[in-house]
Length: 454
Image (tube, rainbow, N blue to C red; front, side, top):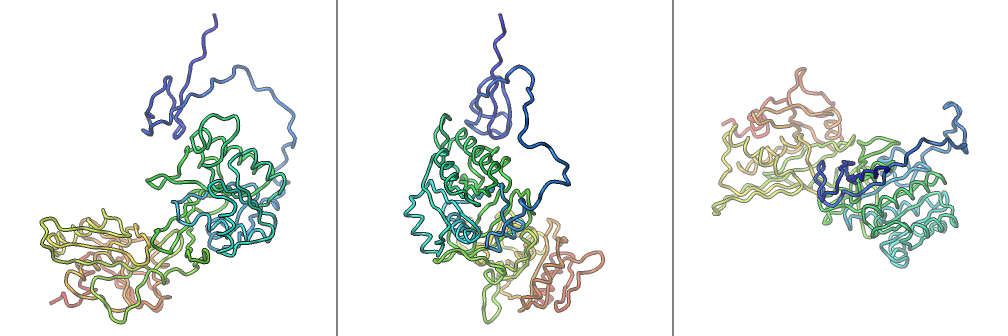
């Protein structure tokens, strides 16, 4: 008797395999992701005649693979020039962050070059039409369809023959003859594979909208991110108008660029110079504030860090942060107490950023320390000063990357003095700004607040 083929089970998230079904993956520890896979068919591979023979690489036409600008400069910056025919892009973000608004703006501008098909599975066609009218995204060659079936979507593609296809969202689509509910692991994988195959065969630039989980990662199987060509993350605080677009994966361009947008009642607008959003304009310097320069991708951004240290009668003082990493705030507080003898253990400490920007780069440490020290001593930093540097546990101020670009951005916006880490060859020199190099946090405090010398 022939032996029965062994059953194999595989995790849809990481690819871990097992000989029996388990509820939890033994590698990535995800629940409910282990599924049975079909046994391999015995026998060799039978060659078939190809439709297009292989050619020398020098004879391949590259004109059809050139990127087409979307009409939004900030989006083109992140994509590396625009969308590529046949390329598949996955745009993920939290609900309400503005993904549909951004794509409607892109669809309307791209429709000037050729037909665009926008397929919505979450809203009715009338709802999308009202939003497009509100943001001014009505175009003659922009076609709209409300569908949740992959087969019906393919029919619309045959009729319209679009240059750009937008599917909002991939979790609402379902493939016929595939088990599972829409949004499930099996359905999402098959729908994504079908859309990618459709885009490659017909040379259509395709944008898929994806949901995110509670921890901010892209929902669905991990294979979805591996199949697509570009993965973009759309971020922003719901209570702020600022939105940032990051490239997590990009086969056609860089992954260290970001795009900045402002979400308004009339649509979404690109911000080529967003630094002004992160500063507070005031007549006189205020204790507890410090300006720094952070680098997002390749773009330097001016940002303001604010701190408030207040006495408290509570047995356990409060520690509240907004826009900053709470772990780094706690570390900077500990370094201030241990290395420079600023006692803030019995006070409430509140720290935040201006404009809703989130600062997680270590180069913000020095500005945070000066803001905390200024609020504690009730001393204000001089006007026109910025602070850039990472603070170590020993109280030393460490070097940061791209210091030249940071200082040039500060000088462009009118700052005249910068407290920076002291390098082996001295601080970086930029015309119009005085860079003062410091080696430790105590020296930085004395440089920023001359009153402490006494």
